Image (tube, rainbow over all chains, first blue to last red; front, side, top):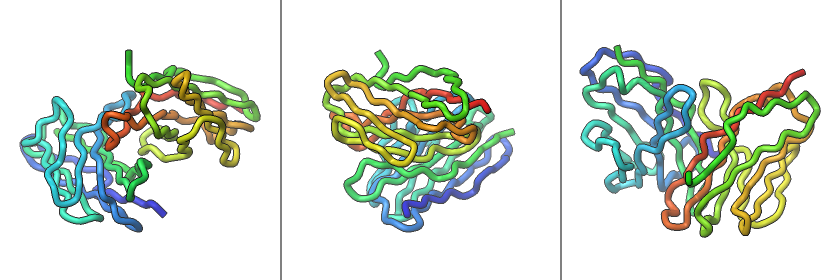
Length: 115
Length: 112
């Protein structure tokens, strides 16, 4: 149980384009989903917390207009990187929390490369 | 002081030995504590959660929590080369129960 999928697993795009990443909880309903970013040899950085049916809560320093998050259902959240630039190249990972437990289960991640 | 602190390592242990990974946290009101394993290039995988003082065992893994000392540890018995990874300590902060605060991780190397 507690399987989270992400799509795509990797993406290469040109500077200025937008990229959408999907995160799905496959065998449970996720009341809350989280989006993280991880640069090489660094730890996870929380970008935003997403609750189904409401606006995402962004961490300080994360541009909400650049990183659009939609959590339309209890099993799906999407992150759209708008007008991507090379400095947005990173490993983007989502996680999902089921019910009242604080355990977070991570998706396999999406590696974004912006040329 | 960082909210969650770990020694970055690497911690090198021989195969079959006990690996001991440590983590301290700053928020005395924290209630939930987690250990994640992250292989290079992969996403984190939950291996242990602990909520009460004392020890919690799961197979070769034992998590230890001491809230008075604000300290949580992970012991890996009979370490295997496949255990070589970065181990992330995560703590749920009292003032914001919605999110986890992660340490920077300890890199473990188990050599044959």
